[in-house]
Length: 262
Image (tube, rainbow, N blue to C red; front, side, top):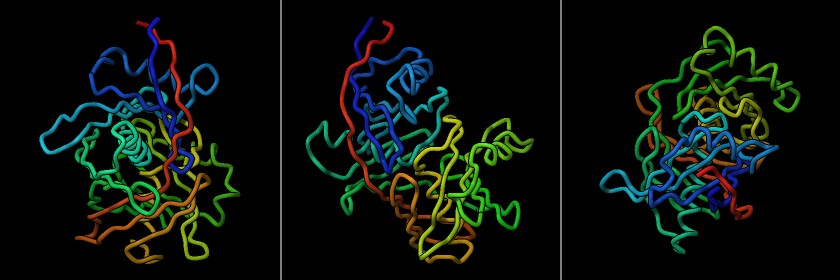
């Protein structure tokens, strides 16, 4: 058995296992590794596995490889914020950086005691029903407006969409939201995790853009998720949004080593 060093981080309750793979030694079955390490009962437990890897593109500082607990790959907003903070800790300096992920190039910096990352442009928001929007923010999201997210029986309600005919093949994240007391309140069911998470960066971004498009807030939106408070700012452009930034808290939980197959 080989021993693998890791660091556990969370961004507003969204928790991740981070591994320094800048030397590229983890070239094996990463999907299997993610499933093993992210398991809440027989593994470390986490909403995803993140490998901090060497830069793949000129003008960038690192690459973030993100795997969901089921081994699938996607972009992760809170995960990218944690990856940037993890790198800052390894380098012992807090400089801004540019990095690549599965959906392209992003920028990150420390801001207001937390980490802010740039998100990909959103070309359009699709109104599926009067109370439901579909938005792709690096991962596909439904934003479902309800009277009170806290009262939603989230797993069966999310499954109606997640495994419905329209989204069963590719999967979709489902966010239940309401505008209340000057901020967006929300809960998220994440595909790949197949459960509720305490927050979801791409989901927070999708919900905030939906609220902006519906006129509930201007170009900046405060969001409260069960795991903490985040903020999204963006610029409207041609029916969509550009210059999108997600900001929120990050924290290291613990460090450790784990045995893995050679």
